[in-house]
Length: 227
Image 1 (cartoon, helix red, strand yellow):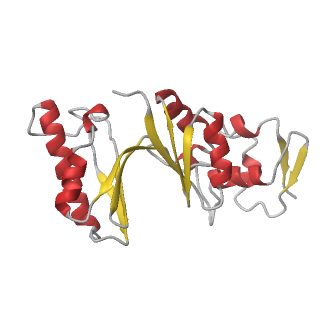
Image 2: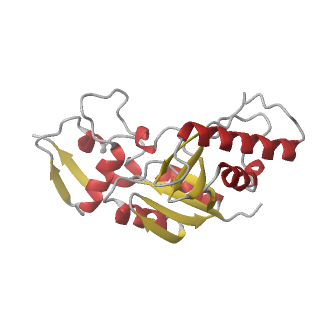
Image 3: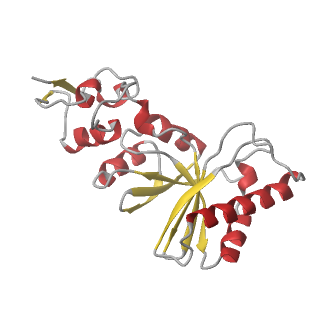
C-alpha cells in the first residue's frame, strides 16, 4: 500500500486560510482549497498529526477516490475500483452516509445502498467471504456527489474534532471549539495579548486556557478573561 494518502479536512467557511497554515505546519503537501474544506497529501504520520493537532478542522477524511457517476452503474463500478481492503478489515463495520448536489443521482438512500453493495462486493473479493458481521471497529464511509462527480471518503476521526474540548455538557447556542480556535488565530492573538470577552456566553474562548487539546494551541499565547 502506498504510504502517501490524499486527505480532506472540512472546516467552517472563512477558516480555510487558518486551516491551511495548520496543515502545512504538520507536513501536509499539495494543498487544494475549496469553500469549506482543504484537500492535501501526506503519510500516515501526517494523518495522525492532523487528528491530534489540527484545531480548526471538523474531522479528517481519507479521499479514497473520485470519479464521474451519472448512473448507479457508474457509481457501483467506481466504488468497486477503490482499495477498501487497505483500510477495512473482514470483521469491521462500514456504514455509509453522504449527500448529493446538482447531480443526476440525487436520492441519498439509493446512493447509500449502491455504495454499500459495491463495498461488500469489493471486500468479498478481497477476503473470500460472503458475509460480514461488522462487529469490530467502525469505519464510516462518506460520499459527496457534486455535479455528477462522486468522491468517496473514509472518516478517520470518529466524533467531530470539536468534541475534544473541555466542555462535557452543552448549553444554549454554544460556539464550537474549532470555530473558537479559528477566531483566536484570525484575531492574531500573540503571547503577550490580553483578550477580554465581555459576553462570554458558553465560555468556550475562556475555556481554551485549560482544556486538554487546545493547550497545544493556546497555552502561553494569551490571557483570556471575561468581565
